[in-house]
Structure formats: structure tokens, C-alpha cells
Length: 195
Image 1 (cartoon, rainbow, N blue to C red):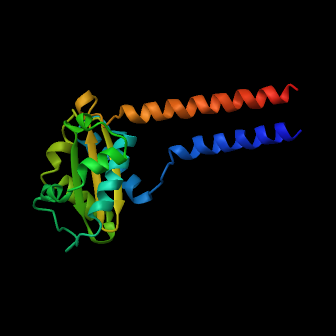
Image 2 (image 1 turned 90 degrees about the vertical axis):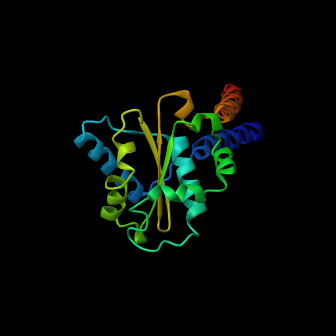
Image 3 (image 1 turned 180 degrees about the vertical axis):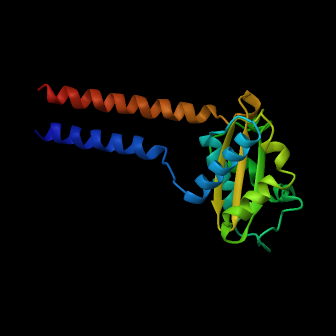
């Protein structure tokens, strides 16, 4: 009896680990911007972007890294928002934190904007009425990640090519290990039920 109770506890623990190993973070402002960018692309006859989870992670990390930098106004980067990219000094560390292979980021593009209180219309203007427009209208970009922190919102555009997919082999290995642990616990749990 004690053995089957222990198996049940281990099974529940394993399931909890799986469900929380890749948490889904919902941010309404990020989702609104992502959807609005897709609407913009549709209106310009460009295919919509798919959400790219590794790019989401990196966008969150970059936004967090930029969050302590002052945002001087609602259109602080409207003339040249790309000038902000040089301020991300921890890029290799952030890529590693998101389990992204650095070679899979070469063809992607990072688009940060700084808008006080992330007012949606102003954020969208920073993407659609600046030098960023050429990237949003480029059909080679098929995926996107979005992250925000304080007054910063970062969109990362990815491609379907290995050099721009923001993929990472280490995350697949880790996921495989978690899967094998769960299968082991599930087998142990089912074996105890049969006794």
C-alpha cells in the first residue's frame, strides 16, 4: 500500500514537472500587438506570422534586459528604433538562457520599441511607420516572438531556414529526458496498480 501511494505521488510530481517545464505566459498587450502585426501583414498581402516559442523567450529576456533603460517618450525610437539593438550587451547569455543555438539566429531580426505605458496604437506606429516596416513586409519572415517589460516591447522575426529559426538542440534533448522520466514513472505507476 505504501509503495502504491509513493508511486502515485511520483506520478503526480512527474506530470507537474511536464506541465510546468514549458510554462505558457499570457500577456494581453503582447498578444494584441502580435495580432495587429498579423492584420497589418494581411492588409499588405503578406502571409501571417506564426508564434515562435524560442523567439518569445528571447524577446522576453531582451525586453527584461532593456527595461532599466529610460524611455523618453511615446515615440522615442520612431525615427530609428533599430538603434536600440546595440544596447543588448548580454545577447549570448540571453540566447543560452532560452536554449537557442546561436547559429539559428543569424537570419532573424530583433525589433525593440520603447513606448511609455505600451500604448497599443503608438507601439504599432513604431513598427508600421518606421524603418521596421521593411521587415514586416518581407515574406521571408514566417514566425515571431513577442516580449515586454515596463515600457519596452520586443518583437523578434524568425524564418523557416535553419539560420533564422531560433531553434535549439539542447531544448530537444532536455525535453526527451523529461519524456523518458515520465514514461518510466508512468510504467512504475501502472505496474503498482496491477498488484
